[in-house]
Image (cartoon, rainbow, N blue to C red; front, side, top):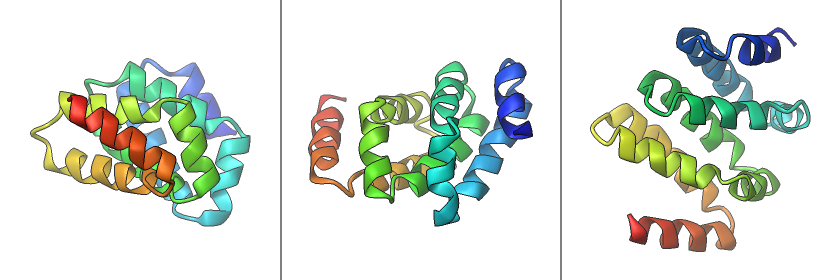
Length: 130
């Protein structure tokens, strides 16, 4: 609950948001936590943070790592694609194309997204247009 409060009440503080994304990254490593994060609304909060701090690489890295962990579950991968996280990941790549750590974790997220055939097509179509 404190994590959720921190992500919403102090959404202007990039250091706090970076640490919140790091916490989500750690929580998302455990498969048992993934559905709970979804049910508690953390996916939408993560999207808000990624959009708000698209220019902050230190926020984007743990956010992309979190997405990479979550998208391994097929039903979550489909939901993330429906919520247009693919566009956000590609925007992060464009914004930080020289940061190898961000590229590593954003590629992890793309790899995890590709768990479904539909997402593979979406990724292919979006990457070709970049």
